[in-house]
Image (tube, rainbow, N blue to C red; front, side, top):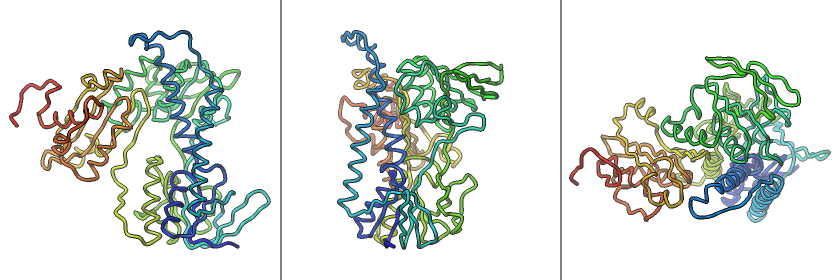
Length: 469
């Protein structure tokens, strides 16, 4: 029997960062993981996918370099070499986590955790069993990809995003079931490598839940890349032979098509099985995720949960901030961390990044809203970088002049959104952005220009009338 003040189950972004923060705050902490440090994000999701996206983007853009005066000969892609490079990155990051845990005194225990009661955890690693006496338990076991009844994962023909990121060759054709962020990100990367990609979405638009004007830019772009999109569509029949034959139904027709592989990207489910939650009475939401309050506390007072396992949005940075706030709470240290204004970034072509209210959400909350928008086609830095697709948009409360939302669709949108996040957290007014000097030439000027447009002060976009300042 070993004793710890806190045991964190799961070493993904939320879990390992929470364990380290607790150790920094003077807690005696154990971190239990049954696979790899870094969890899904580092090993099978965020990091490998962005590595693939970046590589495919460079490969795809080589053909366009002649317009900038650079002539390139024959170019090919070797995914087996790519895999070695990708693995070297994840290995380095895992090594960094391990070093941080050692330096801060976090005890890493390898094995599968089972909660025996609210103060006792059993960890099994092969024939070895370790019993841990604990004061507080944090569940950070994450989530995994959903499959469908007629499309069960087999790792070969019917695959998950994790399988795509381990491919060592470029498939000739792929059907992607699900037009959300994961489907579009990986579909775009594969199409740039040369795969004939078809995306099937049951709804009437790609990226359901994302503002339509942002999605429109991405739709035009993926059409240029050669991706076919089938909306209002679903699969009624599947047969696996040398390839996968599917029957697709939509409002207009029924078609039979053959694909080398089918990627199922239709959401995620919580990793809660065999944890012992039922035995200690931890309640779940109807969708299977763990139910928690604002302090990330379950109905069992000393059991907490963070990250994907408590439900969407499934974002590493959300898990991290939940864990930081929880660490201060457990250590009884005052803090001003607020889990609000959670941004998202979608690594499509071009990227989408947003924070705060959408137009529809603002109207539903009865805000009197005005909008400022600026196109990257008029942004000098975007033009010189050949990255002029998309726009930046700000939503402003007409009564208070506060910024309610910032939405960007462009190359590097994931890097540009942070000014909007800080602004919303501080409750800035649109004049605060408009009156702040932004370096020139940079893409950040687009948000500055959008702020000016919302005030009828823009000089770099056409306005029907001018307004005296």
